[in-house]
Length: 184
Image 1 (cartoon, helix red, strand yellow):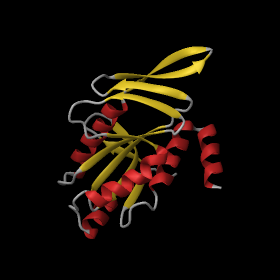
Image 2: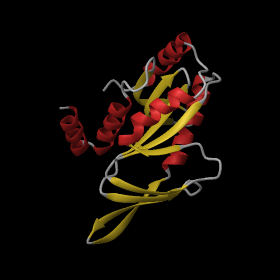
Image 3: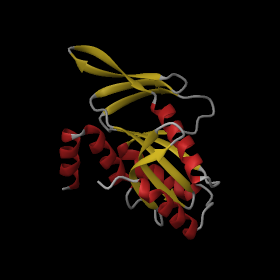
Image 4: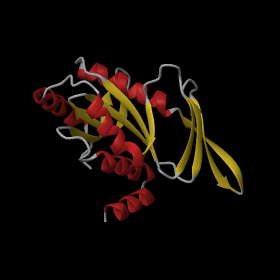
C-alpha cells in the first residue's frame, strides 16, 4: 500500500514522491527521534526549502531528496552544475544544481535559525532507479545514498555518533522547527 502511494505521488509530483520515499525509509529507523518534512527556513534574503529533517540525540540530519529515475547523475562536489543523463534515443544530459552545495545552503540557514551548537549531518538521497557518479571534495562529510540505503545509514549514524543532545533538547529543537514544516 505504501509503495503504491509513493508511486502515485511520484507520478503526480516527482519531487514530493521522492521526499515521501525518503521519509518512509527514515521513519521508525532511529528510536527517540523527531522527523519533519518540507520545512521553509527563513534567511537574510528569502527562504530555503529543506526536504527532510531528523532530530536525534546525535544531531540534526538534513536530507535533500533527488527523485531522478532511469538516469545517470554525474557530478563533482566542487562544481555548481551537475548533469542527469537520460536514455532517450541518445544519452541526453540535463543540468541540475549541485545537491551537495544545495544542502550546505540549507545547513547554513538552519544554523542561523537554530542558533544552538548541534552537529548537522548532510545527506543527499537519490532514487533507487538512478546511477551515481560523484566526485567527492577532499574532507567532505556529505553522505550520498539511494533511498533504499537511507534506513541503514540512519541506524548506523545513530549508533556510532556520540550523543550531544538529551531528550528535552531534541524536543525543544523539534518545537522550534515544527512551525516551519509544511502542513501537507
